[in-house]
Length: 388
Ligand code: CAA
Image (cartoon, rainbow, N blue to C red; front, top):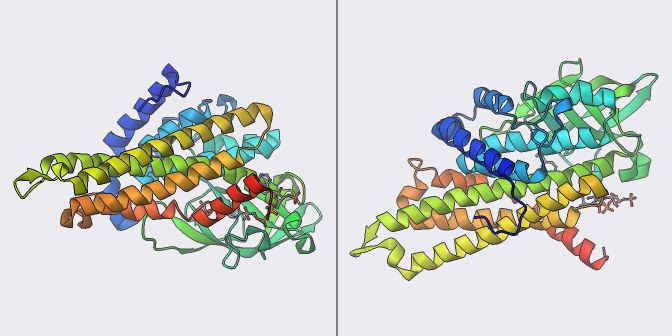
């Protein structure tokens, strides 16, 4: 729905249409199969790279499509309407990996680590979480110890999206544990160096085709020139990058919600019970009305956050509040809508014959990763009240 509130251009409509066409032709037909097997959809991800979807906001000189944040969220939303797992891989490449590298990387780092990922030839990942450090991200235990021209890195990271397949990672680890979060440093990691060990792949409820794993570091030697920013900058880099990531997760949640809603409207128009189309019953029609209203409210927040992120490229202003509100509301909307969609479909909604149960499973992660709903509420309340 074009609300008229946002500065959409012909270019935005072109990328939205291209993403929709690609998603319906290439992704929708294979989504159930890859959800079932949990295999990484390498072939479609490669094609998405060729279409420019893996680095939409990255300037062309660094291998990207050189478009803006609105273009990114529109494309991601359409991909996620077909399959949220493809969307997760796309979102991590674009936001958690490319955004930070573009913002904080040196020219040499951009050439080496950004060009292959933004052009879709390599996969990027972001690694902050550890088994004992999730929401409280500043308490990580991994260590990087400087030894001449290298840092020697040891530690265990968990829940790394694309961990089983990533070629490069942005890693956050401690260089000075006494300084707590101010002792965190970011590093660009190459997966083919000794000491980089892919751990167990996580079996998951949803987004099953997006591979997630632990990553272990055992005396991994990272050259000093691969440090992102200065020693101690890591926590802030992680947070700034997560702000960008959260806009993407908002778009992902919006895409899942739209898919579940559209299927529900269709079903309510066709399915009959007690001599009526089920959409004629208030029990169903009021559900549809609430689903639609929440989706459009989520859309406003997600597009508003996209504009705030775009503005920040020029002003340097934070868009933390907009990003957290968009992620919080859109992810809870996706869960609300997917839950109602299963209910409207009844038994067939619970069956793997239709994608409705997959939308329900996929929606859940949007309330958890890149900061739980509770963390988003904490961020929003702190920003508004100034209290902690
Ligand atoms: N932008 C810039 N700076 C920020 C910032 C932001 N958005 N948020 C915090 N900071 C800065 C603060 O200003 C502060 O700076 P000083 O050191 O100068 O004072 C510093 O960072 C510490 O901030 P806080 O005191 O607010 O830190 P905290 O320990 O209270 O934590 C938090 C804040 C918001 C809870 C944060 O820890 C957080 O976001 N936690 C959730 C982590 C998360 O989202 N994890 C998901 C990982 S990715 C993933 O899911 C896997 C995947 O692959 C997709």
